[in-house]
Image (cartoon, rainbow, N blue to C red; front, side):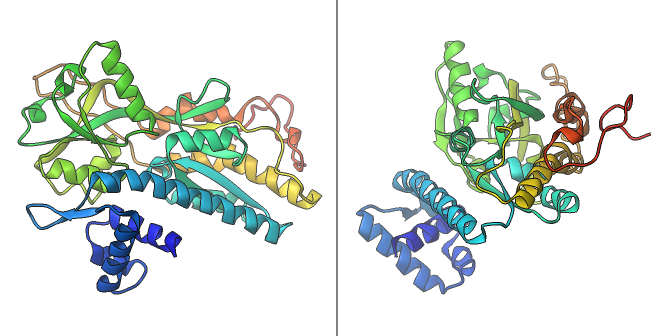
Amino acid sequence: MFEDRIDYFILAYESQNFSIAAAHIPMSPQGFSKAIRNLERQLGVTLFALDADGQRRPTPYADRFYEYAQAVQQERRALQHSFDEITRKGAVELQVASSLGVAGLIGKSLRTAFARRCPEVRLTVIEMTDEDCERFVHEERYRCGLLVSPARGDMAFREAYRTNVCLWVHRGNPLFDCERLLLDDLVGQSIAMPGHGYKCYRRLVERMEDAGLALPDIVERSEIMWIYEEVARGRALGFCLPYMERLAAFSHNDAVRAIPVEGSRWASASPIPANRPPAPMRPSSRNAWWRAYGAWMRGALRAALLARPAAGGGAPNGNRAATPATPSVGASLRGGLLRLRGRRSRSSYPGSSRRRRPGRPLGRRP
């Protein structure tokens, strides 16, 4: 079935080799390779080719087909969730659209914190491109979301987290010893990063054009493993965020380091959805939905983000003025996410019987 081959292709594209991809299904590597060859025959193009090192690498056809495959997979998931809603009827689920990478930044503590505060509601996080996430939330296909800010002008949102944008640099690149990178440094370079559909790409293009500088060669990769692979082989600089440098998959290689880019920021935000739950719902389910919404907006997300370690910048070595260290997640939230509590008492939400005491600040404990 074509849909199965799309799933196989996504696994192959995001994995380092066919054997690893086949193990996720599971199926034999020979059967997996045959499925990919059948897909190539059906499309009439070559999706994977061997490089000089004998490693399979995606071709430009694969890069383009990956965008299509992701869109098909996301639409299929959305359709399945719609079917599930019809089947469950009175069951309650809070679906959250997430820009690729935001849920990974927060980690599994998001689900743990939400389940602790609202155990009767199932939380489902669905990752997608920045543009799709923003569009689906705006169309109210999802009532909650984790966006890359700033959001479109007609959407209300609260910024939750902000950090520097960094670029991975290989030791063989002359920029390796810099403590910060300027836009001028990027001219003539190749940069592996998420491309069309992602705000980091759009902002880089806008900044380079505003500065009158030539755009660097962009190697479009949405998966962080492929971005790092380009850097580790000395082919390009690579988009990353400070916390990624400390992940076990990337912290072992001393030949690659992350360097902040002057004036570049990456931030996530949670939109403020329309103040009404999905309809139709039974009264008990409606109350549960509102409890889930309150747990999401004012409790679970805050607790999950506070559980993340601080994301630091670089220390100066005298080459250039140092970029100030990125504030910890907790410090960032005090200026942003804590405002999610708002000025409304909990009793103003349908289904809540708890009232605010006069004179007691909302959310504060004695």
